[in-house]
Image 1 (cartoon, rainbow, N blue to C red):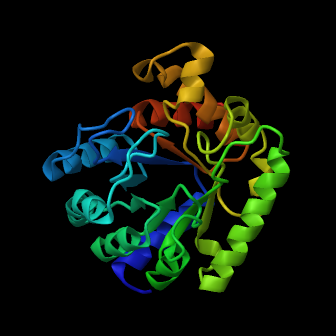
Image 2 (cartoon, one colour):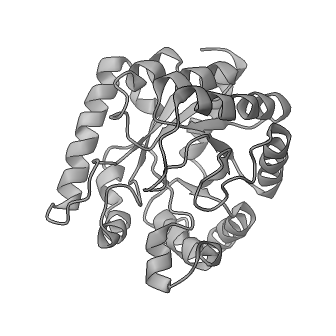
Length: 276
């Protein structure tokens, strides 16, 4: 791909090998746990994307279906309607990589057509059997999230994580997804016990062994609230600390709601030599 979209994708992937990156969360949903209902209008969504870009976001991640545990499934046509206008507008008005947060192949294809360069699949290409093919055919980059489908406190998390990603890389290769297009995510909050979320953050080395960048998405999540006894709106400090530790343990990108605060944290981390 030699199009502008391909150039944006390649610049994003190359940058992950040099500098720490911030992915800004833009949920165009009525029911997301933190910002549901705030950005349903396309113009409002674009304004929010522009604000996050100004604050320091390197990627805008647009999602049309809440992934909180008790959320109702969203029909594909509704997800397409929610995300399509926002992706087209952001890609038209901003020189910024756009990611689609979806596990549906049809939504991933439509997002790529609208200009998105990255598919952020919280099911790690296991929920929709067509997803790997959609990623390959659209020449998109992909975030593969460790999500085993059900929590089990009896497993060795590190061993299970490795088995999951071994299968994921085999699937990606079979579909024709270049290895250099793959980003890995420990799946904080997905199919894990409360304690396993902390363990997953402690074992980022399992993913780093694959030689691909690691994205961590833990912004305002319930494991932080449970530990600190904080509501969703009170979890910024816990989120900041957890993300800084994840970056120090080798993560290349963090997915956050509070872009400005994390940009400041990255500047401090850099000044103090924390990236070394």
